[in-house]
Image (tube, rainbow, N blue to C red):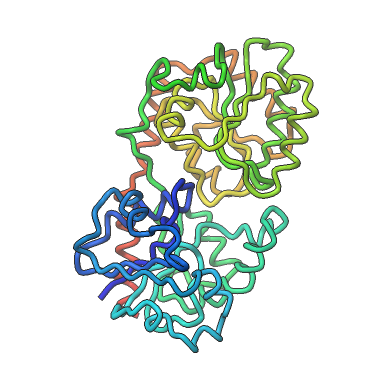
Length: 379
């Protein structure tokens, strides 16, 4: 029997890992699969949340909810977790369990597949909050060595897993993140109240993602400062929630001479997200390190031109179609913004951008997961 640990979607307000989990798991779940989640003391109403995120009813599925402790606490127990084996804790009969968030508990025995999105905890540990960094650095190597197969989301991350964790190539399966091209489509004008809510009465440069050090937002704030006087009709929109250690970004915004033209939206719905992507003059993604970078393919699906960092998986995702800028060079970012503002995206380029985005599908990601599961059963 096959089981899926669905902890990344046992919360409301999904971001990258949660969206990946929901899209892939929803394509793999069958009535004869077990579903696992942890809901400490039953505080969160996990069944309803899972159904909401998976967009399916789970009445016919074998749902196992652990209420005795949080999953993170169980993982932190390491080898001591064998005192309460995972299969005992979850009352599981599965002979293979798929995990969608890096780590497996030390109390897990038998075949398993894990999903490793990136190795930021090893490459740029200073950009992570200390709690998550310690958890990954303390348990990822062991989880990777015990995994029967590993899923990841880019060829770049596959190479990282091989180089840093020493995992053999045949054990790693790449399923790039998909984009819902039936939802993320080109369009003109705003369908939600985003225009009035955020005072978007002219052109704007858009960033989308959490405010945290790895996202390198300070650089595009400084780049915007360099061109703002020349383009008084243009604003900078920073869409997304407040992540770990946002003080550096917030300080850059506060010190900006044009801070009144920098708009922060906070967490937004998918409908508002699509509206902002469709109507942006250019989408900017300045991350220092990414396992994939879903907002880039979503922007391209909307026919919106992008400028991205010359770093990590973003080079791969750009597919030779987007300007690649050194992450910390605010002058080159400013020049790239000017280039896009002076030469707006043509209808022909919009078609090419969307065509490239359409090559990334969730069906392909699910197929990679199926291949990983098949491999795990064979080893």
